[in-house]
Image (cartoon, rainbow, N blue to C red):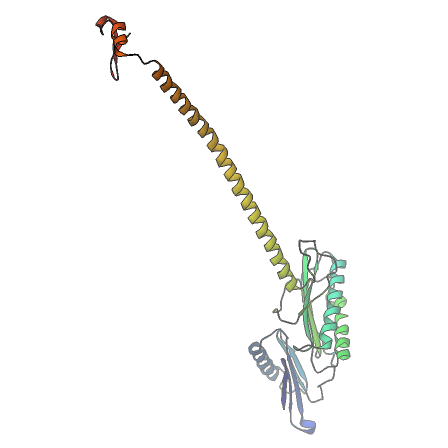
Length: 303
């Protein structure tokens, strides 16, 4: 017999003392193709490593697979446990621990009540210079209170194995969690809100929650603000350019106007010195060479 519910598989085979029960659980953010691949690899690996064992369990990043001859469906199993931690340490230990504790509690409460994706939740919390990403999951066959108890016990191991570490994983047969300072899971509808341990720096549009979605929203808001500022700056720059161009053009116009005025004045002066022909002939002694000064562009010049 086999049943499947959102990446959770329950297998049973045989009868009586020869019965074999198996459970497989894929991470809630993993697609069905990767889920099947992970479970098949886990099954093959257990057959090779534990060919004669009545009970065995294996954890991969994407899935968990276990089998036993006992009844395990709906029963919480807290052992064995498997621990992994990030080698890097945090600097602001108190703020980091407070943020992790708050985030894990919030996600445990959400995951334990179950969703359409199973008992699974992801979320993030921000502290100065760091964002903490976390994932919690229980097998969906557990009651809400049983899931919460399993997670609380697992989270209680953080000081023993992951103190001051930037990341930690605790795997148990019925529940598991992980947190890191870099996002390691795929964004899904299960990504949930988490209250930050300290308020983030104020922006033009304060985020309603510090989840990754809100970060994107906050980034979009920032982009809008930058775009508006850039448009305003461009308009101001265009106005300045127009003003400068007009300022540069005005000095050029004034001399032209002045030169035109002077030219008119000169023409007026020339016009005011006109005499009739008889007067000019008498003044130049009938255009004698003795009164000739030279030659110009229009002929001889007389005094």
